Length: 295
Image 1: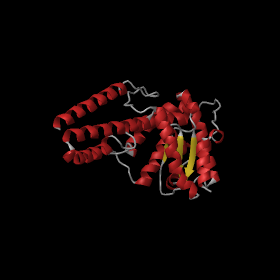
Image 2: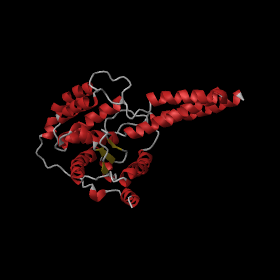
Image 3: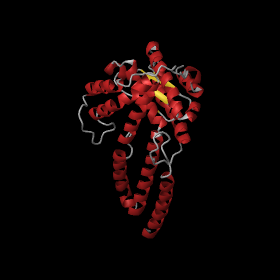
Image 4: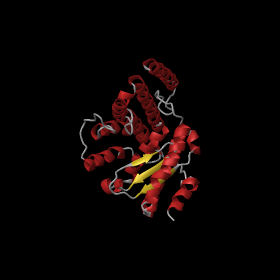
């Protein structure tokens, strides 16, 4: 039996090595950084579309989705100016079914953008930070930058690699130890591989997001004031960022403060700012699913 396990393990390792070799050829479409990619962006977008409906439907049924017309109009208006700048980075994203929804959850200070441009903004950001439009643009620009840079695709790929590694360990150790090893490996993977975003990805999104916002006509200096407010609201000021999902606010502010002067040329540009009309481009499947769930 031990020989059979070893043979199976070697076959799995060989498959994994092939996947890794192919993944090494992937390049970030925005930054040029080499990325570990074994899940296609198309697959990530398809999964995100389903997840988007699943995540939003409970809020829709509870009347907690886009329930403040003035705030929704504000978030949508800002996002509509950011999307054309994102498309300028990656023209193929013009075909994405971009969407943004405002979730009425005062306790959640968050926003996100899935692969394919599916976005959400939580009212906790308004309650905790009382942000200006320039600061909201920094938040949404940062989240859009994650999607542009395939960060979700990268995370999904790491999860696939994690599952492969657990499988190999279980085969080698045998059934009597497989559960223990698998559990330990999974816990380690959650810390090292499946954090919401790596520090490198967060830094990339900061760099791209501040430029998106500046080109859309939003003051890049707001990136610093945003994080000053965030540090105050969350009590997370300080330089230590070990085991952190995001770089610590103080470090982040230093990096963004250094970037802001470089972005002023885009902000001060007097050329017209293009707008991408989200309402006309709303994913019909999402619209139908959400509204049928509300009945």
